[in-house]
Image 1: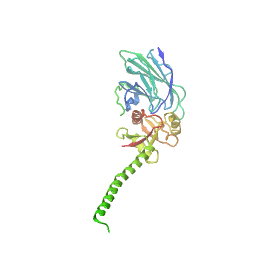
Image 2: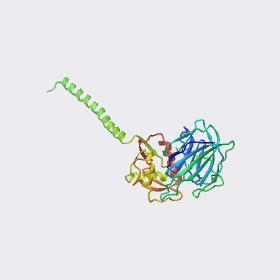
Image 3: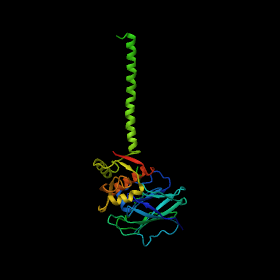
Image 4: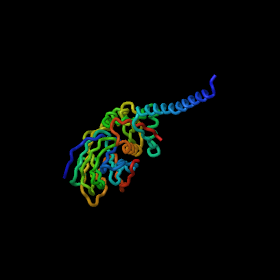
Length: 163
Length: 147
């Protein structure tokens, strides 16, 4: 298991996006169904809804188990096929962090850990963790969710670039 | 009295001068306009109201009420601006608090216009803006039009 150095990222428009580095138009349109399930996914990019629009910590792990952490309030798994370019994590008009993840088929576990109680304006620091575990048959699922999300029987696994 | 030859000469000079002025004056005016535009923004962006109608209405109304149509990109100022502009405005399930000027613009912050916009419309519009503007560095002045 490899843990990359943590970073800090300004979140805007309530979304944080993981995409294959260099992908054109990585940010996607959201429907109500995407909002309710907490993510919008398409090949090479996935945007997750965030808990707060403020500075957050991000952590990326390569390897390990895909299980919900006890401290996380939101744990979502999606398939992710990485290209040989590595991946980028960013938000809207924010800093971009690049990570070298070997090309392959993965399950990507997204987890949200509040680091402080919500403030009056709903600004509070959150840590978002992204775990890549190799998988030959990756499957999307919601392991754990907070009150802002619903857990639909069928997840919507299509999306369109916002262009 | 002028002779016929002199008359012809004077007419030719007048004609040439008129043509020169007619050619040069509009160019001078256009150059001045271009220079003025160039000094107030670096790029333009036409926001699609057909795709994000609620956010588009908000941008249009905020600009009409006197807020800036130019966004100077300032990524690091976003948090401070957002805290200032959203102070005292509670969250609402199913809606986002849309700010104009946007929080990641130098023009944003205290006094920005804030409106509740359906979350799917607002997040999609943010994604659209992100796809359009990510290539620009901080300090780039982008003029927004809504169509």
